[in-house]
Length: 285
Length: 285
Image (cartoon, rainbow over all chains, first blue to last red; front, side, top):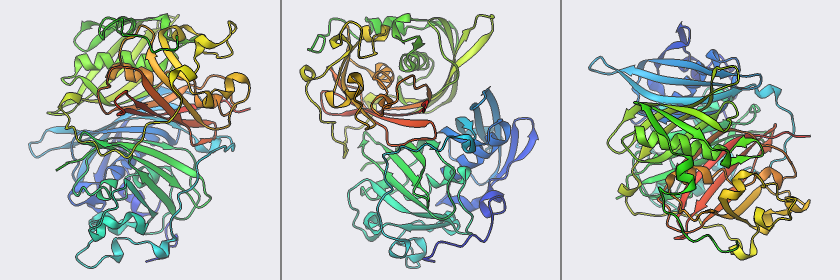
């Protein structure tokens, strides 16, 4: 699947929409069945979880779009039932701020908090058109010269062969794929084309998942293994145009067992639609 | 004052320490008198406020240092009494997560929330020494070739002539000072040497103030006026060595009435001690 998937499904009627659907139980409290379809190895993807929480907040706040959302990851989520409890912290004319917790019941029957979130929401459609950005889109080859999990041999040199790989259309820049061939570049960079496998276009909520959807830069730094997110903050700056996204991740500072991942997401109109940064833990040998 | 101030006072016994001192009222609740000494024009500096909250969290959590702290600014704080209410969200072996709110009583006698914070704390002294950073310190002239509010004519072309200017030792790179001479560079950059005027060395809590202590990059983008912070996230990555800090701020994306400020703070040992990003609102004309 070299070509970006054609939009066979619309926003609101796709796999991503069904798997992030929350059900209002009582004011501010939402039930969700966390899908096993968005797992990497055994962990539920942190970006998918943030999209679930972001959707609950969009319902509970008077503004629709996450302008800035910060998540602190407390314990590892499991596929299955979860509850999102939201609190409206402040409502304003152009921005409103909310808080949310995602919780699950563990084997012992105890409710355990998985993620705590703070976010300020606004309405992207009301922003002025003024753009004076100095940022330039990342330069890398077109999708037909990039590679994804589907291009790997059956045993999977690209260890994206988890459930989430079936839901994404991911084509990584060969310059950031050395790790998959046993020759990591040593640079903290990861770049690629990004879409949803069923062709659903991006929107502010799916961007919350996109920023955590590529392999970690630590692979290119020669560090295999899981890189658990401690905290992830996402700024959505613009409603993305239809079509595939370009995602660029940079790590400048790997030190003391932690690294940051800085993400930029660009749309087909060459707009920087989203910026994020996460602090993650690495296991150094 | 071209030379960095000599450490006349120690950490724990300085203006900054006195002005961020919180008093335990009851478990998790702290009283503070917000000092008028850290105001810019009429607003209390957001970094000073984050340091106050960070100090309350350091007291209430089992770990001492803010590894990652995210603040959403709700309403403008005033000098005077305030209360910080903290909640321990989770305690772990190496990290603990807390939440805090800073509140003040307004003229009508109502308690108003100013800032909501989520943070994960650890102990910087327990981190491994491993450093594989690709980041390089910013290159700019030594302090004697840089300029601060004290170098401005009495009327102050550098509009840092607020109370906070007396508490900081700030020497800005001339290449990012065009705005002060009516000729902004058009680049979203601000760089400078940073210290406390009484010579107190930096520590993780003072870094929370440092990241918000320089003039905004919007001045160099030709946009005068206040740039209120919506959200600020700080990662403290290393305990800073004694001596003056180098601070570098970059804005890539000014669009739709918002901009991001990415900050790096470097110590005298050439270590990247701190990274932050904030989303702020700009008033475009």
